[in-house]
Length: 314
Image (cartoon, rainbow, N blue to C red; front, side):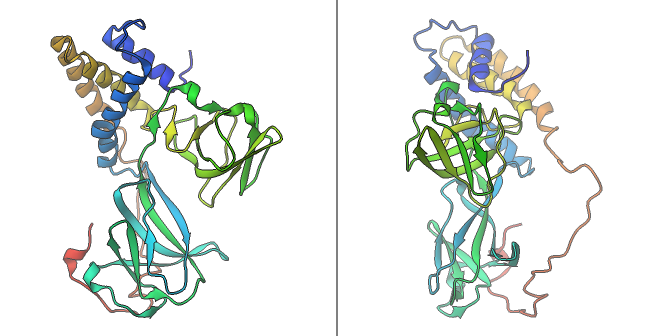
C-alpha cells in the first residue's frame, strides 16, 4: 500500500506503536495530534533546522512605501528571525541589492535608496528610508510549519478548473469550509510537503474557489491539499522522520501510563532518529563552488560600514 503521509497514517502508526485502542476515550485524534504538534515544535522541527538544509526557507515580497522605514516581519517566520533582506525589481524579476544587517542604534533618519536594515520588535527597519516605491522589499525567512489537523479538515484537490501564475480555481467541494475572504494554504502531497500556496485570499462563487496566488507560489497538482491558513493534514518534516514522530507521540502519551513501554519507544525513536537525520544533510552532494555576490555594497563602491563585527550573525 502506498504511503499517503497524512495524519490518518500518522494516527494509525501512533496507535500501533502505543498499542492504543481507537475506543480509548483519552486517545482521541485531537489529543494525539496535539501531542504530535508538541513533538514537532520541541523535537523534530529543531532537528530539521539544525541540519541547516534550508527545508523551510521561503520569502515574502512587500511593497516599498516612500518615506516609510518599517516593514513587518512575516508572521510565519520562526522566532521572528529573518535570513536575508533585499530590494527586488519586479519589472525585471531580479534582486537589485542585498541589504546589510546593522544594529538598531546605527539607523539614521536619512532618505535615499536603502542599503541597510535593523530589527525592531516585529519590523524590519530600512536605512536610509526609501524616497520612492520603485522596488519591492523581499524578506527571506524560515517558515514555521503548520498545525496538524485530521485529513478530513483539509481538501484533497481532485480537479483543477484552471491555474495561472496569479490564480488557482478548484471546485467548492474541495473544501466546503472556505468562504470568500478567507485565507488558505495549499500543501504539496509529496515530500518534503512544502507550502505551494501560502496565505492566499479565497473567493467563492458559482461553485468554484479561486485562490489568489503570490509571486512565490508554485504550480499545484491534483492530490495536493487545500487547507485553512496555518493548517496541514501532513506533518511538514521529511518523510524519513514520520515514523519517529509517531513513536515520539506514542511514547509521550504512554509516559504516565506505562513508563517502561514509553522508555523503550523513546530509545527506539532516538536510535532511528540519529540515522534519519544523517540523510538530511548535505542536500547538495555534488562539488560546491563559493560564489561572490554581485550585489555587495563594496562591489558597488559603497564601502561605508556601520556597527562592528558583533552585529553580524554567521
